[in-house]
Image (cartoon, rainbow, N blue to C red):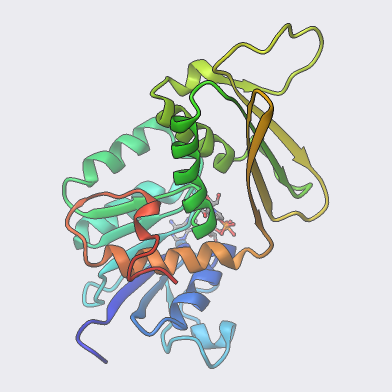
Length: 272
Ligand code: NAD
């Protein structure tokens, strides 16, 4: 094993994302999966990863308690908002870098992340796709460069999605507000119907389409006098998130304590 190998523990390893991350991390030569953590009482605890994922999986068992002797450089959390506090506490206890894509966090949990950044390097993102990471940056730049153009954000997801607009659409709206130096909450408008009157300048409009098995599509429209700019991203495969997580784990293992936005992994050594 080369000296630079990064040991990764996956928290929420039995979940859809956890399993995709285990597969992607196992295929990345810079990473070694050192622990696959499942919730207490999970029927997977004690079972070999290879029984579930086949011979290419790392030679270790799922566990519901991290062994103190297990090396952990990066703790990756894709569990759920209810389990997030314990995941962050474990990263702090082990002084490991923390990469989390868990959504639905409340303000107190975001505050805890901010405090933790003084002690460990961490990256949280509502979407770990590299294309979306770049779209965030483009959204900020376009909003800054075209301050008076109308901005609308249209997203489409599969029919089973429970919330609207998507967390990614909201993050894109926040990037637009940041680019313009305005307060997001005062500008966001969700859908339009009836006699709305003329569109006020500076609104950030959101529109959610639902149907079929669409993995995730986001389009930012900037409309000015006589011209229109559209920036669009389409995800066709959920593995895009796992690939971004692997890139983030490779990158963050070398960083000093701090909270890093996901676009820091673009174009760098860690990018895949
Ligand atoms: P999932 O329900 O399939 O998986 C979550 C797993 O976490 C479950 O297996 C659950 O048993 C496990 N878990 C719960 N408590 C635990 C604990 N204390 N210790 C260890 N494991 C525990 O959900 P999912 O689709 O994999 O999504 C997980 C999270 O990631 C959600 O918050 C989802 O919104 C988010 N997500 C983020 C991105 C992104 O790119 N940021 C992409 C997809 C999903």
